[in-house]
Amino acid sequence: MNAEQTIEKVRGSRIWRSVFRSGTGNSTLHRALAIQQNIFLHLFATKVRKRMVRFSATWYLGTLTLGTFLILVITGILLMLYYHPSVPQAYADMKDLQFVVSSGLFLRNLHRWSAQLMVFLVFAHMFKVFYRGAYRTPREFNWVVGIVLLLITLLLSYTGYLLPWDQLAFWAITVGSNLSSAVPLVGNKIHFLLLGGNQVNANALLRFYVLHCVVLPIMAVLFIAVHFWRIRKDGGLYVQQSEPKAQAPSDSIEPAQEVK
Amino acid sequence: MSTPKDFAAGIDSDQRRSPTRVVFVTRRTSAQVKVSREDQVQTFPEVLFRAALAIELLAILLVVFSLFFNAPLEGIADPTHTPNPAKAPWYFLGLQELLHYFPPVVAGVLVPTLLIVSLIVIPYFNINIEASGMFLKDRARRKQIFYIATAGMLIFLLLFHVYVAVAPTVIVALGMVVAAHSTPESPSQLRRYLASKPLSYWIMTWFLLELIVLTAVGTFFRGPGWSWVWPWRS
Image 1: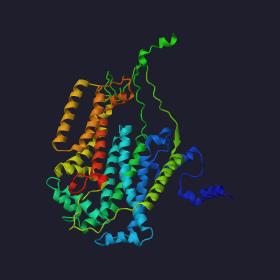
Image 2: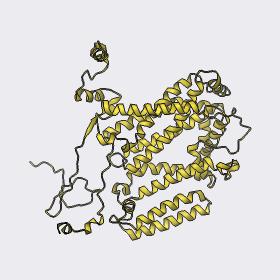
Image 3: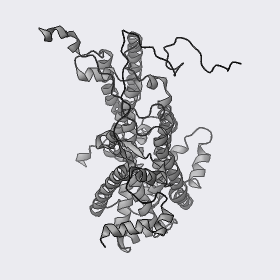
Image 4: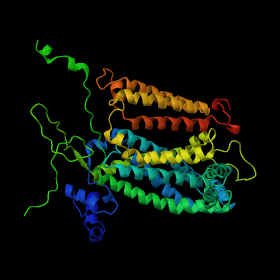
């Protein structure tokens, strides 16, 4: 029995069919059902316009942003196994990642660089969508969801910045959080709420840890789901209407000339 | 017994007031035929596999990059020892650069709030729905407003010594000047392109250029005491 037959046999088994509702088969119907009958994949449309699949249409910026997010979730969970959000243990854990944990430094590198890239990709995605005109009716709300996701991404990156508890982290968060004090009337209250104190300290580290590892990722997942689902609901990826061709001066050339 | 009418007959060419219209094609005009049916591919497997491939390539690149470049880690946090300069993460350095010129309530609260609000209202903004060239209608008045607004902006930037923000403003303003003196009938393709751009396009382009310039200045050109340094001379 070759591999293909084995796969077919597994896919036809009772257990497999109890899990995947779309059933076996390679027909267009089954391929559509594979999307439709799956709770995660049904966020997407069953079909996509062929020209929107080309790289030049979207540069795959949204897909790549999702890619960085997935890498961040995986590496983030692994990093959580080695990290204590307390002072000064947090910094000692960084050193352990560097010198004690196998591939610990690589893990942190991957998390850090993916995070930087994600911020960049989110901005790039936003500008690409804008210049394609893909925010227009009926996609207004999905644009707003995108802005929310941009803010969540920035907050995720910002809260993660403090966690290594080195000089870079401490002073970057000090500079950033001092801005919240500038809010009229309630500035100092917001500042205190954010940090759990009047300056960046152990409480701030714990708060940022909870935001970074629990609150913001859950919000991100929810809004990402809405973001994908709305693409389908709003009629699929936006196709740029070819703008009415400008009347080039060829108008002045009378067809009569060709006749002559 | 008559059923209530759910339509009203009338003549209107305003697409915002009456979005659903019956179009009569008279003999002189020809209806523009839009192609609505086009080739589609199945999301499973074609699109999903491409997405997976893109993500895998990205993962490989990031893994290779992470093998060769280490994430920065400095000494343990020390509240008694302030590094000079203390910099925010790179994506906030544009704001930190503004903080150098304006009071915190402007650079840290007003500007970010306005930015977020204006990003959110972009699709709800009338001018965008029209999506027509900025200077194609009412050209003389719009040109006047544009020149006054640009001059005001430049004076404002110079008054507060925000010299780094002047260049992007001038570049976008020059583009708009070209647009203001171009028509969709222009022989130059660039001028036709610029003439067709709405106000939102110009604002967004200005925002993009300012974002790049301010972030780059904050990241590379600022040293101790937020003084100007040349990155290649350090």
